[in-house]
Length: 315
Image (tube, rainbow, N blue to C red; front, top):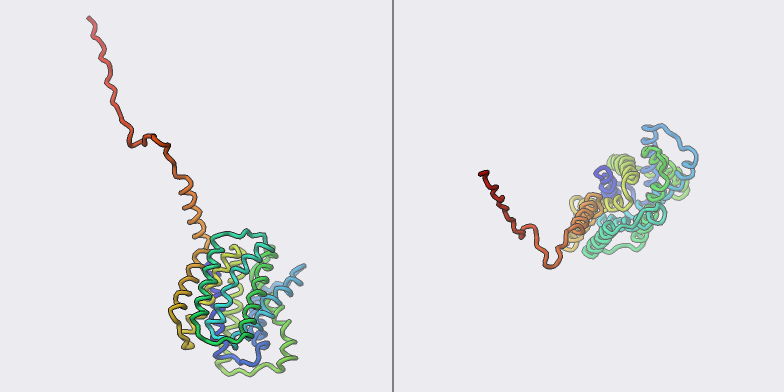
């Protein structure tokens, strides 16, 4: 679970990095520059090409999880405040649970669903306390990014067949980046110029927030239920909000602090250890013995000592 948590924390930081250091008028090139270097880095580490069905699966997953998703997220980062952009993505656990039930055969479990509900409630409090006018286009782009990526994550989980995580992640990143490359050339022209800070920002977003983060995320999806991984993703708004406060000067009100606490509670409720503890507690209550009316408890029993009958002596 700790490895999986790397992904949402890194993703939460991309909103602030993108807004502060990357060009605002080139979202397609921003997605290409983020995806292709990350995919090439992982491909060099594994040196394994797609095989069989993974050619078209990589294209589908690259479109959902990388190509369209990165372009939308880049656009969202330019249109919405850091806290608002990252908290909208926190609604993905509920979407992932439903999609995993529909496409991956996972059961809908009560405790993770309650955790997802708490996460959404925390998001609502965070949004209510934001006090910043939000662009409708930015909100729509954020919701669409959440839905498409949730579907892509569940398909990646359903299609797992023992292929190593780094290879599958590299194929998706390369497919998504190559899909966007001609579109970026036609729509936005030449790649945007970047100064020293911009180059460092692109490197961070590509290596840490993409290569490392996506590998950690898909490793979690391969080993944990989709609901658990989705709830770990609630660390995305926590990281985004805290970075917005610490680095961007955004302010939190009482409702947002309450929302953060509820989000963290939702994360805890979705973890397997919390579910096992609750299951043990239910079993313990179910096994408690019931005494019949009028029956004496062991403590109430009277213990009598029998005195042996004396044996008559021989005359």
